[in-house]
Amino acid sequence: MLLAGGLVAAVAVLVRHGLERPIDLRLALVLHGGLALALIWWWGLPWWWRIIGALFAPAVGLGLGASLPGWAWGIGFVILAGLSWGAVVSRVPLFLSTSEVWAQVEALVPPGRVRVIDLGSGLGGFVLHLARQRPEVAVEGIELAPLAWLYGWLRARLTRSPARLRFGDYRRLDFGAYDLAFAFLSPAAMPDLWTQ
Image 1 (cartoon, rainbow, N blue to C red):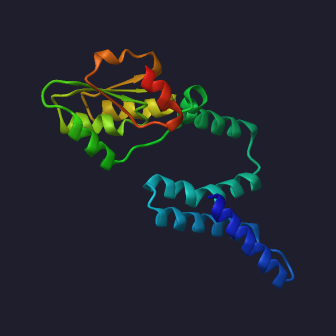
Image 2 (cartoon, rainbow, N blue to C red):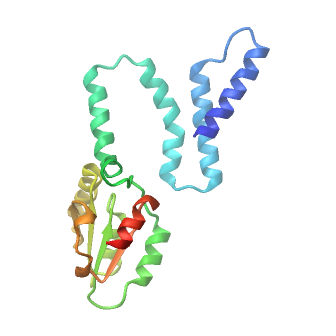
Image 3 (cartoon, rainbow, N blue to C red):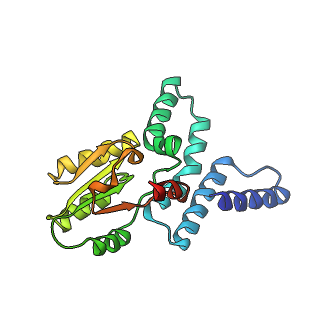
């Protein structure tokens, strides 16, 4: 998004020198969103990055131009904090794995009744996938961000999945209780996780 912003700013400066008036902010924000979307698509990033890239700059523009009441900003803060609390506490932001990663980890799960834990389970995607594909496996997830955990927990309940999603900090777990631990986390957390 920074690259897209820089390119749009460069175009705006060039256009300003050829025009009597500066480029419209709304047009610049739409260009920024479109360029960010194109770059994200070209780089092959996951689908949710496309949404973020396309909507970030226009959302900032709307937010700056809107006269929202103070409580609306508070709600926005609570939502962001609820989704990113893991980054605040353990330096692990919400970082979603893909179905390709799930398939690779699933191939590592030994046959029979084994216990698997997803450390930082996010929205519960891998946990629910593994419970669906391998019903003999006792699969759990643990997540520190409250809204991400709640979303995954609700998905498990609504789909009647046998998967168990817990709210908590994986750094307080005894890994000896599990046969396999899956950690799709920020590299910043890996050295401490390895020693644990």
